[in-house]
Image (cartoon, rainbow, N blue to C red; front, side, top):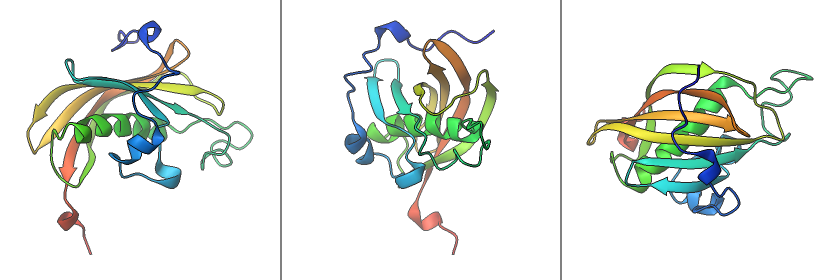
Length: 166
């Protein structure tokens, strides 16, 4: 049985996002084929959460190879979508510092249904714990129409440019 939705899908106005792609780019560093958000629909500062979506197209970099003739969105990309939403929230409100936000881990990830080109993947993330300058923990979920297609928990950690390995 899937967990309850973090936010009520029927309360969301997907046609009038709070942040479009250009505004997301001012916060998130991902570009080109690694941009996995189309818009942010709602930011909920009171409950430390956000809702956004990814319009999945037939032009995604994975469509020809995963799976040929049956283009199913890879689970790792679904997780990346959720991480970019959580990262947007953490960076927008300067919860962790650092130049970038990276994965610190994931738990309880469950894939419940496939996602295909032509779908609008609605994403929800809600921070459950933060340790300033160390880590933020989030619950996340993804929906296509009104069906939960994946969920889990993740940890985001701040990364600084000087941590780069040469």
